[in-house]
Image (tube, rainbow, N blue to C red; front, side):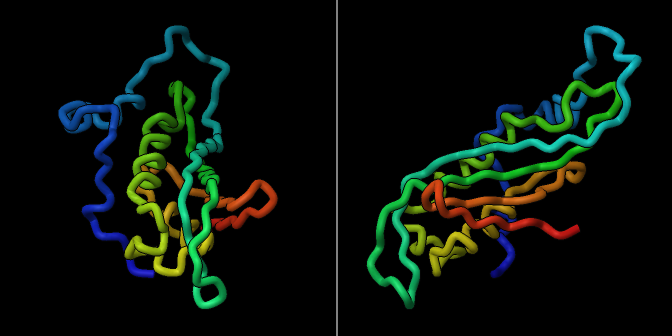
Length: 157
């Protein structure tokens, strides 16, 4: 699949202003703990976000008629939380990005230029491209058509 155009990487729903980001960087990284956390050390955490969307898709050449699913999307991130940090990632920001990227998809997923086959494999790849900070890593993306059927993309190092 082709790389996503840079214009797709902009998140219109960010909950920080561009001015905050330009002058202070990622605001959640500058939060200071109210009490000293002397017993803390640098720890690596995993974070999961989920979203559901009702869409149609079809899987050519096997299935040519579109059918509806409530797709479940789950992304697992990894980040290091420093000894003085309160947060490893801004999970709300990442949740907003996931919702935004899901809402971009048309009612029939196959009509989206990057998902012409409409497969859960393609959708895993698509959602794995959500932009993150350099210090945040996408570990996996899971898409389910039903709770009984899940496709998981695990990212390689």
